[in-house]
Length: 167
Image (cartoon, rainbow, N blue to C red; front, side, top):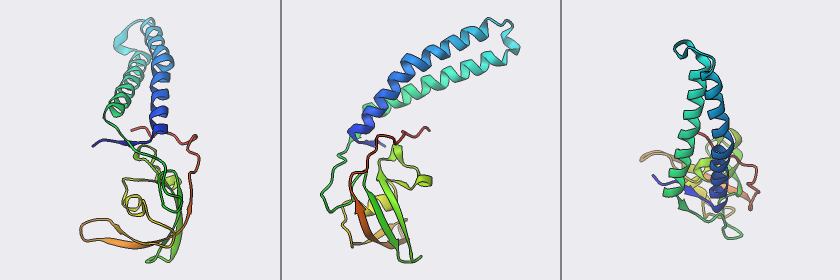
C-alpha cells in the first residue's frame, strides 16, 4: 500500500534521510571500527552491537527512500468549515456519551496515545471532509460501526514538531 504523505511529511523524511546518511552512518561506521580494533570478534559484544546499529540505520534509510518513491502526495488544506489533515476535531461519541479531541494526521504520524488519528483509521476516514454538526457513521468492520457527531473543528494546527513514526 502506498503511503499518503503531505509535502511537509516529505520534507521531514528527506531531512531524516540526510541526517542518517551524513551523521548517523559515519558514527555507526566509526563504532564498528573501534569495536573491531578490540580484538577477537567471536566474543566481542560491542562489535555485534555496533554492526546491528549500523544495519538498523541502513534499513531505516532504505525504508524511507522506498516510502518516498511510492508515496501519494495529499494536500493538507481543506475548506474552512470541513475536517482536513492537521485539523483538530472534537468528536462526540453517542454510544458512550463522551467527547474526545483528535488531530487528523497522515498514517506515518499517527499516534493514538497522543490522540493523533490517521486518515487511514476508521474514525479518520469517517470524519474527513465533514462539517461541524455532522453525524457520521464510523465503519469498523463489514457489520459493525457507530455514530459520532462532529462538535468542533480547529483548523490547520502546526505540525512542525510532529515526528515521523519508526517501524
